[in-house]
Image 1: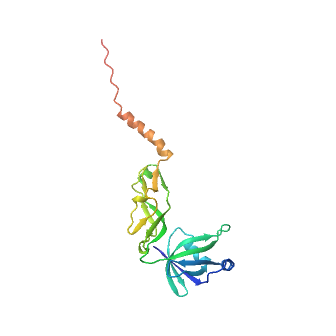
Image 2 (image 1 turned 135 degrees about the vertical axis):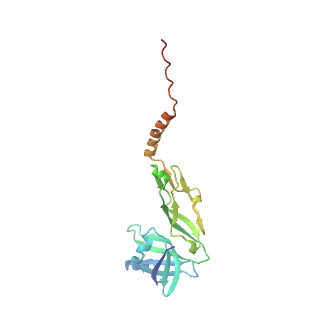
Length: 209
């Protein structure tokens, strides 16, 4: 998985007024948990632009007061009125402990059914997985080349070394559906075939003289 580096400043567990002042200064209060102790820190809101506002998923290398931590974002809070970033919880990663994350789905290929006029419908844009940090993927690639109209790929069809998929096994990730064009084309295509298969009419018998 891709890594993102973030520099933070230590802070004490603060009151609501102190947190409000911190945000007014253009900083985001954060908490790192999952290790031997919780670490309260803050970082400039602009430093989160390429971490938060992106479809990609990263492990985060936190540099705080001379110490380095490897972590992932677990919970983000936004202002309900302004949509400004308010708070982030990070979870510290351990090499021997699986972590649960949502990873984006990346659909690739040109489905047979799409070439025949069907529509590719992707229902799950992210999948919840459990894996050790070394096995965490940047994305889950789903190849659709062999999908015909009516075919789909479900969670149970996906295999990735070291990764356990946590969504319902029968959930459809993506599939090819019939469209109005394919439905209308079916009877038109069937008519010539039916005509060719019909037996030729018997020739009339010659008239008697």
